[in-house]
Amino acid sequence: MDELIGQLAAKAGIDKAVAEKTIGIVLGFLRKEGPADKVQALIDKIPGAEAAISASSNSGGLANLMGGGLMALGTKLMGLGLGMSEIQNVARELFRFGRDKIGADQMGEIIAWTPGLSQFA
Image 1 (tube, one colour):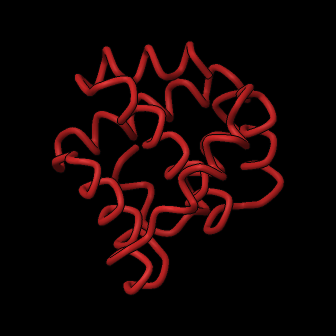
Image 2 (cartoon, rainbow, N blue to C red):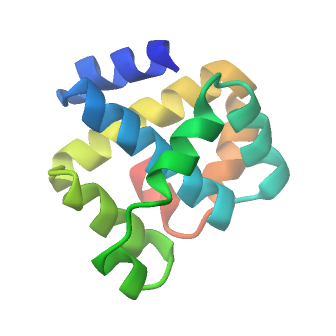
């Protein structure tokens, strides 16, 4: 997890604490919205991912009122202070990391089968 946090903070230009929260929020979103077996394979390859997902699921507020999906994800990430360009950078870096961990084919399936995610790939 530390490797991913460091890469995300450096490449997306965000604080490490924000990067960690972002990872938990995005992985939680993927678990809920994406293809379960592929997402779980990714989560299993990232030590500390389960803890990050659990920690991020406690944050809610307006995002919980909006239900699920990409809009709720965006609301949660903006609540951390991320703008659209930072969210796009975060997504690209997470996808790159995912491809390294589970392969381009499986990561491609996660992106393709998760509603709205392909626009960030």
